[in-house]
Length: 388
Image 1 (cartoon, rainbow, N blue to C red):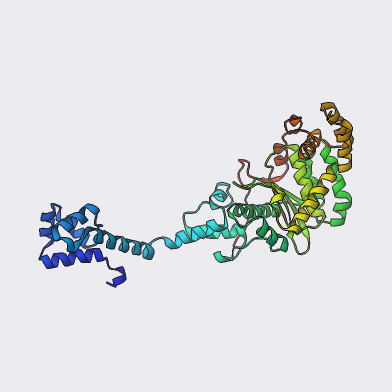
Image 2 (image 1 turned 90 degrees about the horizontal axis):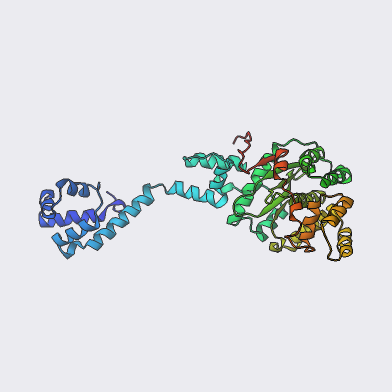
């Protein structure tokens, strides 16, 4: 037997028995144990226990030290585990977990649960649309914007594994969502105005997906994954030709103001032809000046699309701290927005406390989900037909 796989602990016991001229029967009698136990140990079918190691030391003296026996045995068992164990499977699963939140993806039904590691890898790669080589798993959108976000927002950190998986799922659902051919000029000239008319009433939320599809934009709603604070994203299925734009929302809060704030923000990314935008809770986390400028532009233009800043400031100044239900309803009517959207904007800029008029910010999550291609929120995952 090659020395690197020899159990030196057993060899030491055999040598001690040889020198003492002990048979298995003799040693078993001295130890008060069945001879079968001694046979199993000498044939490496049973490990030497700490109790037996001490007893062997008593029989053979210091030349068969119990600590040495157990140390030699432990090294041998560890070597066997490294040689013939499941280390390759474990390494592969660990590599997958470095790239994707595997358990949560399985819970959400994005990939099936597989006990076979090879099959698990295949399912992940099918989901990720990559080659069948694990080391080639890369972000789905190669662009300077994505590279900047990866560096500044940590999209390759543990929570960003979920962010990236979320992006894959968004793309998957977007490809299953029908829409007309996108015409940027028509969208800017007509689409934004048509969409703006829907902000006035609550049921306008349900009409958004169809309206966007009319102008060539796919809307999907994908619930955010654990430990992420994503609000939405804007991207392109055909980035090179700037075709098939996609807007994704997470509906983290589900209120009417959040729906329109986030949608307005993403609409501006499409309007300005921004390559890729992944929008999370705080823009303060963005360190890259160019990326921060892009987000601030979308934030500003989105807010002005809902209610121009000058009109909103004029309303606040006129009311001079006397904002009440009647004034909110009256100004919302004039501004052609749902009262909950106005309240949300007033909350956002600190004009009124968050505790005031919150009841006007109605929940529109169910309404949005009923009319959109969506994933999460306790519903079975939609299946895409893909092969690798």
